Amino acid sequence: MDIPARLERIEAQLAIQQLAVRYARAADTRDLDAMVALFAPDRGFGDWGANRVELRAFFDRVLRRFYRSMHQVVGHVVDLDGDDAAHGTVYCRAEHEDRGTWVIMAICYDDRYLRVDGEWYFERRTVDHWYSCDVLERPHGPGFQSWPGHEHHRPSLPHRFPTWEPFWRSTPGLADELSESP
Image (cartoon, rainbow, N blue to C red; front, side):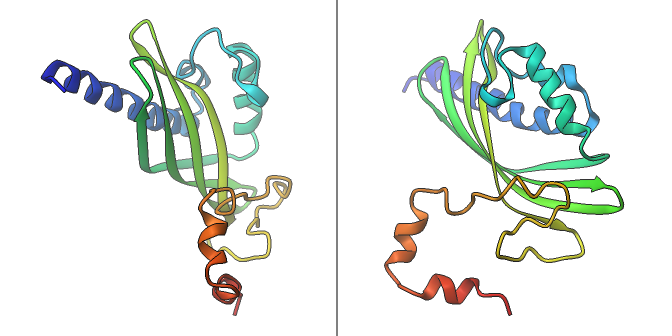
């Protein structure tokens, strides 16, 4: 790759990585306009909304479920799919103040990114998590979901990863042994 192409690739990756950090900051500061501006214009966002107006309403509802939050981006992998498209995975540890509890949550975002008029945006975000629990507890089974009022939001990780089950199938019984609660 020549130097201009390498620089363009680096700039794209850095711009995309900023999306995740800006999303976390917008969520934690309850800046709905900044949050919605991170998403590509004139797109549908699946269950989150058909356009930016609906997307803003979705985030408004979600962010009113808890008082204070802190989303820490702890890792971000970006794969470029061409000049104007990419996909990536963001790991995040989030903390939420909710009616006298302080809930921690380990989150994984699977993202699609799109460049429109030279600017990178989220095209779509899918959110999964490993667990949630009060900061004074340890995550534990069987559901790994200990956030009152959020029982419907069951963790799908790590089982959603396509390599998870095949890895453990090679040593029958070991996964059960390692994941048993004391």
